[in-house]
Length: 239
Image (cartoon, rainbow, N blue to C red; front, top):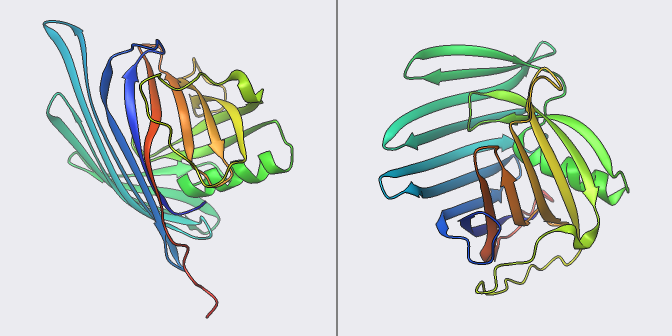
């Protein structure tokens, strides 16, 4: 993962003239002990003149470089109603626990081993793609929802299978040119239980930067396209 700040344009649907519904910002920095994650999503969808849905999601977290612990705070707001979670994920005596504090109280979730934390999951994905592993399956921690592990099935696609950028969107240069086209299907654990929560297609660069995302939740299809990018500095951990 290369430290970076990426800004995305969100649209409803895949059509060239699909309406803009919001923005997403992801910032990932690092020191010699932790990855620092900030994610901010704002959207408003008008289904009819009288039916509008506004959604906001903020996440701030610190994930240890070795991927064994993750502390975070998330706040979600649906039509103004907020729900906050303070979470701590750590390996204790061979078990992976997510300890969560919400306005409703404290809970503990036991996660399956080995559940990957957010940045570790991206690094794992890149390593497998570099090795030519086109299909694999892993549990990944989902902080924005209820502190659960989600089962992800990943497949590598043909390079030209990802949709083109919207015509009006200015091209953003990504320093790392090598990329893969992937599809991801996410389900709640236990593995393969029930219908998929979502499916996703995207380009992932060797630097960990994502672009041309298409997310299908069943209720709506949302696209996210990179519209601004700043590359950060990697920490000097030689000492």
